[in-house]
Image 1 (cartoon, rainbow, N blue to C red):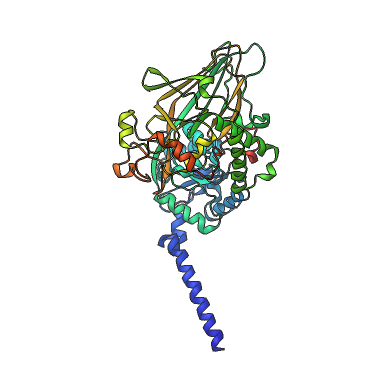
Image 2 (cartoon, helix red, strand yellow):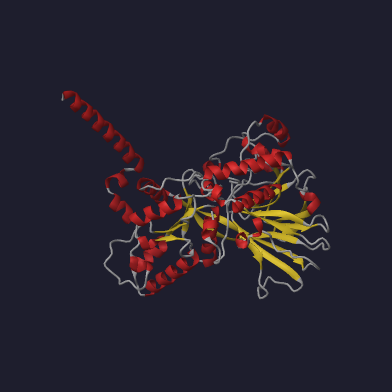
Length: 512
């Protein structure tokens, strides 16, 4: 009996030690009083629904949140996360984007808040001022939310935190929320909410892309999505005949992006990946499988390159100063060009890298900020060149920084090319009898993001110490890229971000 008692005491001590460690990870606030902690995020139903009677409410929460979750993302993770959030917050402040589109939700809630503010509701006024948004899904779901918030054109837009449920997860990774799929249990959600409470606000640039070409004499020129499915063309599609951008005799397409626009080799590999996923959706149920499949397609491109050089396809112009276009020299070896806004591409790689002080000065470059109105333009020779990103201080060929970028496609250079916006690839037919195909990228606006202490993105408003955060030291000269290439013995995916901006008629299960 004494032995049993000793064993019991040992087990109880071990249990309490484990419990104490869990409490310490959650922090004293959550461990001691989950109820008080959650009240700081809770939004009463009357704020969300005008059919609900106004009831007595406590002090306004300091961090009221609206939660948008793609229940189809991350296999079963999205659905599990939806249940957890609804169980610990007001279920009316948690939304499944597959059931109710974010634009409709936000329009309804902001109209409700404005009405209550006019009725001198101080509680509603504080909710309006402090409101934050959590979006859980892939980069596509996050980009969709950011686009909706940007379109609202609010004087102060709600800051957005992103939960990584996709494959690439470039947006969450850039702002410190990680790139691995998270836990969906209560403690994991409480831990995430604590990060939301401590997170700082920072802005991110939004970019507009416009393509215009003469109407071809024969054959269509609309973008072709993987397996010719139209769902992925919401972010880039033809404008209507009544749109102010439309020009008679021309086909005009437009879209927007937060992370990057790319053309050439990497977009071609991404197109193959999405085609495979649409053909065999049952094989793409989790992040690891997706990345493994992408790696196989990437490996095939190493030995069977088929992309044309960018210089054979188009002439590139950039604008560094307002109103002053200049030609950008593209080396004949470049097969892929990336216009980058964030320091995360293809699931955490940084094609621009960190130029040292001498390079910044000699080439008239600035540190890469996400809110400075500049894009970093990077080139890659081939898939092997992409592997350099895996090496310490590895980077692509830095071509320029620009406020606007213009691609002018050569007459008859090719009948098509591959393009990609934030991971969303398409095959773009080009008229072979015309020399007026133009793609132009320009700054559109900004929204507020929430960033953790592990944020990799830099702001023009950061201090010197913050600007140097996460840097691995000065980089080697560009001439050392060949040596870096030879030293690489492994590869990882090059272009597996999973972004889709989805139209109303699209099946949400296809979205990351």
